[in-house]
Length: 127
Image (cartoon, rainbow, N blue to C red; front, top):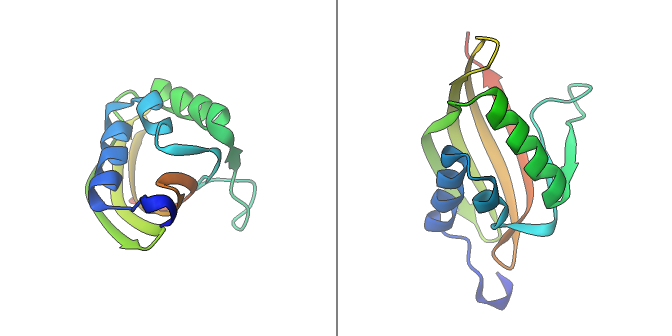
């Protein structure tokens, strides 16, 4: 990584812990200003919803946590390849309409100077 910022398991665990605490500011503190998040859902199978910048990502996260107050990620594993990483996880929770959330998924991460520049999320529904 440039400028001595290394992607580590501890960094990925810290980011994931912030997601599990629903700490939007804590999550965003690890994201670059020009970050983007490609969500698992979108208008077509090949086109994810793309969120750009910390403000939009923060709004999406706050709305999601309001709708799914017990959302949590479990069984997390990470792999690091220089300034890229992969996280595998299961996400669980109950939406405010009573729907159960139970997905197996992964995030493809890209970093610059120790900050997330891209988070690309994939999941499969467990039925």
